[in-house]
Image (cartoon, rainbow over all chains, first blue to last red; front, side, top):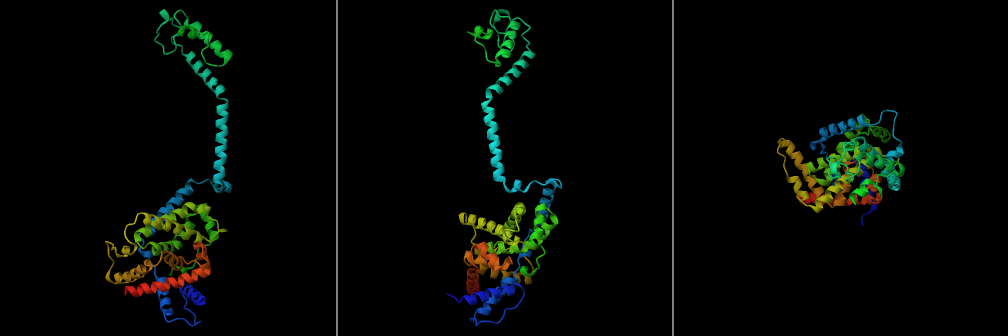
Length: 185
Length: 186
């Protein structure tokens, strides 16, 4: 193995070269030491950066990007707390937990939500009962998109009953004894 | 060369970059561009690839600027770690999909050739780079870090996960091997 002090001296000489100084005399060095230092000197003087073709364009692009970032950043004085940017994983976890709780609550009270939506839908449907004022002759197919009551049923009476049912039981399901139930069986 | 240029941007000033001050980032760019480009050029050889990777390195640096903390590492070490990762990713991809051999990249000529005297100078530089290209990857990286970046031996040792003494030994041997390659090319 080489003498460690020689290698350390070489590193120190290279450091001096890089700072534009000359090497110091010290321990005895092998014959090719000065040639090695010459090679190091050549490397230290080597600058190929003028060959780069992107120096100006990249600078412009990065400055534009920074300017755009500044334009979109928060107004002065209003800065996001540092933990906001540094603890993104924790923040994402908290958001996922909140989303999970929301989903759980939604699923647990699904019946209530469903019923509420049903009431609204029913109310909207009742609001425009185009056929409700017409008597369906023969009780078969009417021109309406709504369910057709049974043959001898009065449409207005049917909707009155249905509204009562919804008000009492809070669902839009068809009661066993509803005109529809009887009519379709 | 580059390392003789006085450092005008301190790590504390760089904190301003996190507040998106374009003037500070411009100073950072002007100071580091040559060093980053040279570091990458030493390692990949091809000027156009060096351009691409330099661009990638600075884009990454700008993207991650908010995460830089002067308490953890000097800015130079942080910047060259980004450049090093960009080069390592590229070399890994090249190993998976090899194209031109590293040495052959220096033989390629540009369409707009420079005048005669510049060609001679260029040839000298290329000869040196060709010899560097023949070194082992680890030696090439050390030479790139030592001669292009202006980092101290301690910083280089930290980046490469070596001791300072190891850095001295590897540098000595790398230059000695480089001499051998240069002689062989004469």
